Structures are given as structure tokens and as C-alpha cells.
Picture 1 (tube, one colour):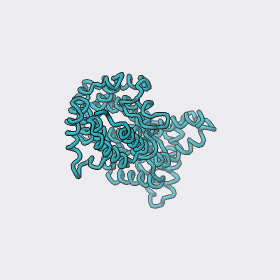
Picture 2 (tube, one colour; picture 1 turned 90 degrees about the horizontal axis):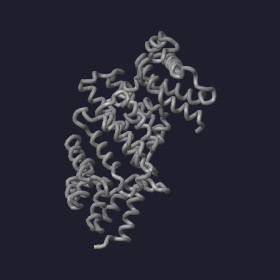
Picture 3 (tube, helix red, strand yellow; picture 1 turned 60 degrees about the vertical axis):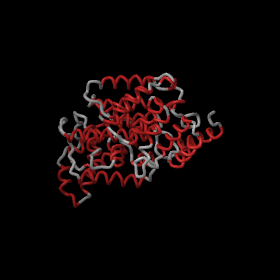
Picture 4 (cartoon, helix red, strand yellow; picture 1 turned 120 degrees about the vertical axis):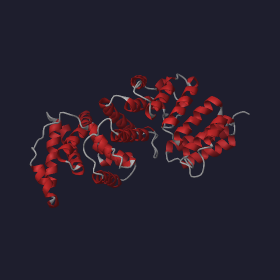
Length: 412
């Protein structure tokens, strides 16, 4: 990508939610406006790198999207009322004085949508990514992703969602904000540790999640929004040390911590500290606190496992889940020995449980049995975990771990 094209792409991603927010606020009809804005963004991506960015890029996009919407309205006889409504609007609407990005995020992360649909719609409408780019990121055909996005827009329309923000102290506000943060967290998690495919991580997705969360944090610089941004930064700081020269997975305990991004750690820690006094901490602030404890340790053996175990105990009270219990089992094993961790894991493997048959449960069991010196059982779980994961780097790591353990069992 040339420098000019890269600068244009960055500008378009910044302007995309602002332009779409203005269009939807002015005309309604989220589905039609979103299509028109995507066409305008594509036209800009084709022309601006060679012809130069116009003096008023947002106004250019608004005018182009408005023209596309008029063309669409004229071609749809069954929607004559929309053509008349659009035709009455100025040809080149003024750039909005306010940024509607947060409103647009609230709309795209509507509770009526599944997380997968909300992520796809957010990446397209707020992130400015094209459908083909989103499809590549999630390893699905473009037609499949286009259908997912189309269904998401239809569901929003059917739910009667309005393009406005609920009152900040209302229950609806809390519900909608929780949905936004959940979608951004899932997007970051998929980017930091890809659930499938040949990559250990997808930096494009995690970077986009951080970019969008920064936008939300600028508008809502408190509480769980700050906690989520801090969590992302403190976690992403380890990215340079997570893979070896051949892209192989390097677990946290074996990472070269000199490669961690100290600037991100400092920024994440500062943001986390700023959230203090914002009421009872929720799951993102607690997860950020755990990430900060890991990042603070200069060596793996310096990790404050008792404190991490205590925070996981709080997290189980605030946002209980099998994954939280799984992670607390690891911390418990580091404090009280592998037997204590394995006893806690026994509560997660019941038939029909959320983690029954999940590769992460087998991987943690393998690690704890290895700590306990039970080589045969550890090998069984390493192999089971490798067979269940859909991430190729994780699978290679688990297979290699089992091979090393088989060749060099710990001394009894």
C-alpha cells in the first residue's frame, strides 16, 4: 500500500461512522444509508489517492452518499415516499457539528443482534471495512458475510431501533453500553488469539478493536469503558513476544519480556488507575487488573499469583463464567499446588457443561498434570486438546509439548 493510499484509508475509517451517523440521523432507513455510504467510501478510496483529498472530505462523502441515495430512491417505485423525502434535502448537507460514532455503535450493537452479527455490522458501519475484508478476517465467503450483515440490518429495522442515545442513567443505556463493550471485547479477543485458521493472532482485528474502544473512551472516559481499553492495551503489549520466528506460539511463562511494549503497559496502567473511584469494578476493570499484575512481573517467577488468584475470586462474583473458573484454577495451582487446581477443574468437566469437550479445559488439565508429575495423564490431555482446537498454531504447540514431555519426562 502506498503512503497516500494508506493515509486515505486511515481518513476514511475515521470519517465512516461520522458520515453514516449524519445520513441515518437525517434520512432514517439505516440499511439504505449504510449501502450509500459504503459506495461513497469505495469511490473515495478509488479517486482520492490519485486526485488528492478534497478540501472538505466529510462534505464530499456526504454529498456522494446523498447522490447515491437519491439514485436508489428514484429507482424504487415502491418507495416513492422516500424519494420525495430525500429530494427535499440539500444536495450537499453540511458536515455535522457533533460526532455520532457512539450513537452508531449503540445501533450496531443492538441487543437484538447475535454477537457475530453485531461484530460484522460494527466493522462495516463503524470501522469502514468492506464486506470482502470482513469476510477474509473471519475466514468465510464474501457472500456469506454479506448475508450476515444484511440480516443484521433487517433485524435492527424489525426491532424498531431508533438512531438516538437513551438517557445515560436509564436501564436501556446500561444494557446497550454493555452490548457495545461486549462486542468490542469479542472483536479484540478474536484478533489477539484467533479461534481458527493458520494465524495465532489477527492484528488487524485487535488493532481495530483498540481504535474503536479509544473512540468510545474519548466520549465516556470512565468506569468499564476505561477498564476495557486498559485491558486491551495491557494485553496487546505482549503481542511482540507471543510468537517465535516461525510464527509458533510462545506461552506467557516463556516469553522474552524485554520485547513487551512498555509504552502500552504504561498507558494501560495509567488508564486503569484513572478508573479508580468510579464505583464497584466490573469484569473489564478486574481483567485489566489481572493483566497489569502479569505485566508488572519482570520474570515469570516474579508473578504475584496470590493477588491474581484473589482478583479472579472477585471476578467470579461479579461475572461468573466457566472460563473465569478455568483461569482461577491455574492461579490456584500456582499458589496451592496442581492438586488444588485440578480439584477446581473437576467442577467444569461435567457432561453437558459449557467447557465439556473444549480444548482449553484439556490444555489446562494437561499443564497441571504435568506440574504434578503425572506424565501419562498429561499426555492424554495434551493430545485431546490438540485434536479439539481449530487454531493451527495452538495445535502445533500442544503436539510439540506432548512430544517433548514424552521424550523428556520429569524426574520422579
